[in-house]
Image 1 (cartoon, helix red, strand yellow):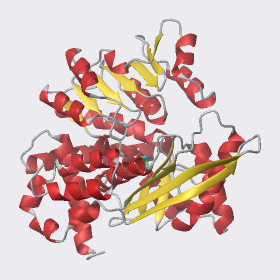
Image 2: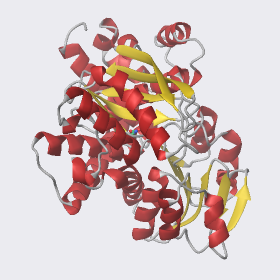
Image 3: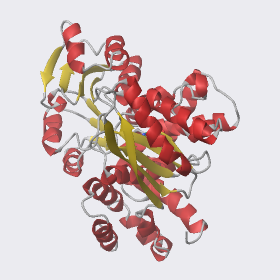
Image 4: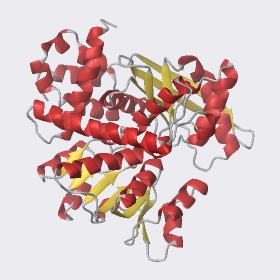
Length: 445
Ligand code: GLU
């Protein structure tokens, strides 16, 4: 890290004790910004980087609800409104027992740069709760969402803060959240949430967008070296929304996905994952990949263990933060992996990233690769604002165009700062400069 940025990083660690994922996300960005502060001293003079590391507002609240036995349950809710220089705070809500302030802040911090990189008018924020939806009935999930929104609604608005989904928050949860927002405010304010259902203000392609966008990005990486996805052997970790639609687009473009996973283990299917079966098990039955293996003859399931043992040319971590560490990276390299692209947020540890890059593996970071989800959320906001709804084809074409432009802007920025081919530095610098210029223009706020 550039020595001028070390005090900024030290300050972040001191001010935010124990928030290790947040420290990790900040470090990754600051490590790219050395050449930027040399070229543009105005950012340091106006303390832009220090200000970027401090959220504009952090909200923490109590979420009481009753379970199906009538017992009172208690969770903690968060919304970190990180930066609004480019537009209203925008970013998802995550419901998972691992959620605490450090996770929400790492996600919110990454979201600033991701959203900036998309070129669309959206600021950065993130929220969630340590609520665990696993094993809860629909009625319990609804009561939780209603209680969560009963506090959160006062902080939201289509021009203020616009949440969406993330891990544990899909269309079911967004429906309950939107219903409660509408009831409390007496406003059908479509633009206050994205990821909505198609019959109540949602956009075509939003469900598929993060996974599809991830694959469009990888397709651009390959195209850049005169290669293509056709015939490539791919491993996709996870089996949630991002993984499912990444697999769908990979198969459409001629690649073969031979493994996917969940928190219990992974499944290897040499014939290529049967997506209809996976969707039925994961979406309709809320089941596990072990159930997939049980119903699919030649596939085999490995409980526990690491999916990165499975040989592949392209690895797409699409599950969760820090799922791919140094040991996994070593195995991937030994097995001849050539590209790692992050469909999830920060799934690769810093040690693994270093190892992959030293070994000549092309690595692309989540803020660029998985930006298609939030970009399509911004397209949903555009449609809501004009009371319009676009076709699937038109929306998908817009998404593909945005992913191409993110890819090119990361590579062009890497060239401009003399780190050719470095997608991490390119994405961090391109994302940073757009938001930093807006912050300078808006004065000291
Ligand atoms: N949670 C997604 C992300 O990590 C989507 C956010 C959104 O659509 O606002 O970018």
